[in-house]
Length: 131
Image (cartoon, rainbow, N blue to C red; front, side, top):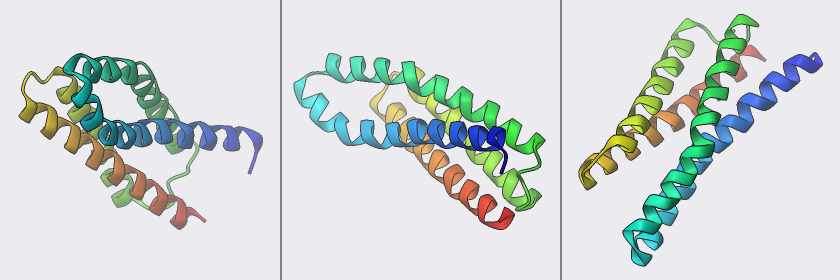
């Protein structure tokens, strides 16, 4: 593996760690933050967005870079499924961010996390098939 390939993969995995891990961490913290007050939960969400959306952008850029570099030997079906999962995660996160009801927040957050986890699993499967 060339150095540039290692950097590309590192950036992709790092961004996925922030996007997915951050969602899992924030989901675990929300009940405790709500107990302190709604403004605390909103402040934490605003701060998370400052790192989450740039990480999502890095995921998109490095994902495109992966495709262009030919790192998709796992097949079109897995790649298509991963792209759908990424789109669901991003769109649902945006919906969550714009939601004005608890139900909208819950649905958006859950769909975003499920999409992110699915994309991560499909990425691992793509990597296994490429090996």
